[in-house]
Structure formats: structure tokens, C-alpha cells
Amino acid sequence: MNVQEQANKALKEVFGNEALIEVIDERGDGRHYLVTVASSIFKGKNRLEQSRLVYGALSDLMKKDHMHAVRLELKTL
Image (cartoon, rainbow, N blue to C red; front, top):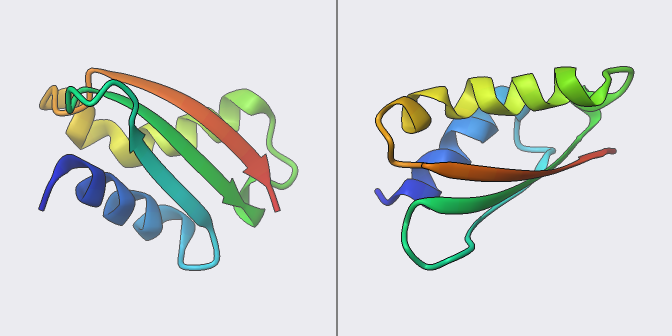
């Protein structure tokens, strides 16, 4: 399973199947990613709380340096 698939799986575990999740390798180098998440779980949460949920889901991949840089686009459903 590649990093994008692992990230999608980790995010689905936190946000569920109703969330819209997209992970894009922005530079094609396997280390710089754009992560887009649209979820109702974000409702009532500020931007920092939303970001913490996403980074928490991706923490293992980031600790192992599979994901060096992550840019987030977060939306509330």
C-alpha cells in the first residue's frame, strides 16, 4: 500500500465513509501532499481543532517521514 492509500485509510478511520477525502502527491516526490477533507465532524470546531484531527490521523505516517509536508484544505459538510 502506498503512502496515499495509507493516508486515505487512516483518515477514513477517523472521519468515516461519509467524509470526502482526497490525498494528492503535489510534487510527485512522494513526500509533499495536499490533503482535502470535507466532513460533518468539523461542525462546531475551529480551524485549529479541525487541523489537529487530521494531523492526529496522519501522525504515524508523518513520524516515519513518509509524509514530509502536508497542506490542508478542510471543509465542513
